[in-house]
Image 1 (cartoon, protein in one colour):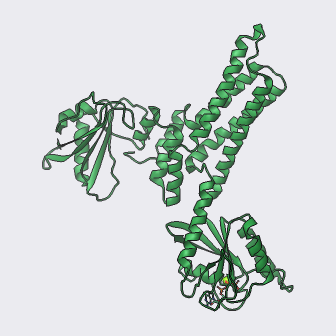
Image 2 (cartoon, protein in one colour):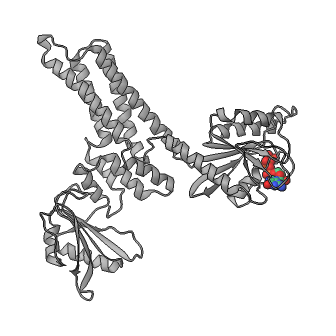
Length: 459
Ligand SMILES: Nc1nc2c(ncn2[C@@H]2O[C@H](COP(=O)(O)OP(=O)(O)OP(=O)(O)O)[C@@H](O)[C@H]2O)c(=O)[nH]1
Ligand SMILES: [Mg+2]
């Protein structure tokens, strides 16, 4: 549990656990200078220096180690991450050595930091807002390149920007309404009813947009889904097996082998994704569609609609049929981005198309290019789905934003009904409070506890 006392001095091993050549001990707080003066042997940088500096020396610890040599990075004033006097001692990465240094610092009044305490100090000092603090955690916690990307984007501003703009806009409206209230007797109107309604309406749209993005984020947080579809016998199952490697799907030259969709998780170019093999589509040319086939095709349609990307597999070794030609013609307008794959390129090819990616699951030819195209498409789709955010931020902010939206709606209604500026102003203050909870301008110990206790020690 993090401590909210920022006046005492803290230290923690900040290098990752496990054997490492270099170890780092991070310190922050007013007392670290006097503690270092007592135990660090080396030229401590001048306290009045404007910038951080590094100096070599050693820290005296108990025998048998005696002394631990290292480099001391020192931030004298408020230029540090926590805006407090801060330092890092870089030395041997051996855990017993680091533990000895921590013990020595403890003897000089520097206590072990709680999880997330450095980041919490940065937050309390106004260096970062809550969504960025959560982004720091997101970066630390990220399990994949994708999660890391989202967290880094949030760290760079993400949600803070739009919410701050929203606050600024509403504060301006509030200020004008309140100014009008002061001069109500002089009959001076600072802002017209129409202008208030327009500003509130605009803010409401922004809130709805952010809420929608949070919702979408929850969907897009899943592993991307890539669906293979096309005619029976096109080579979909072979392609899935070629990528997933574990020959999961049954393949045969009997058309209609796959009746249920099969999911395989695989990693292509560092991106984890789900490759879904579906039952081939008979529709329209074969009138004798069995109930099982119809069910299978319905399933194919629904997984295709929910996919992040689809791959239309078309057999290159035989002529295109009318249905395939139609799908290729309509590809550009499909709701889900679609790649065209020409399969069985090891056999004599019967058709050509400028955007088709030619592959052979048999020989492996073209699979690398297809992999790159898949990952490229998914990355592009993701970068346009802006404002993705760390799950904990989304979870924490959703309620505040939703309430802010409802209160704003109320303010609009009061305004429209001509209920008086006083009541509109009071509701707007409530809206602003809820928005402040998003960025952490208004926070409770409980929120801080929830956010920072999930960090690891040293961060
Ligand atoms: N020569 C060659 N044959 C292939 C290739 N890919 C698939 N095949 C053959 O094509 C036939 C159909 O392959 P599948 O992967 O089962 O086709 P599917 O699209 O899953 O078919 P359904 O499950 O019936 O919809 C099998 O006999 C495969 O061996 C390839 O790259 N080269
Ligand atoms: Mg199949």
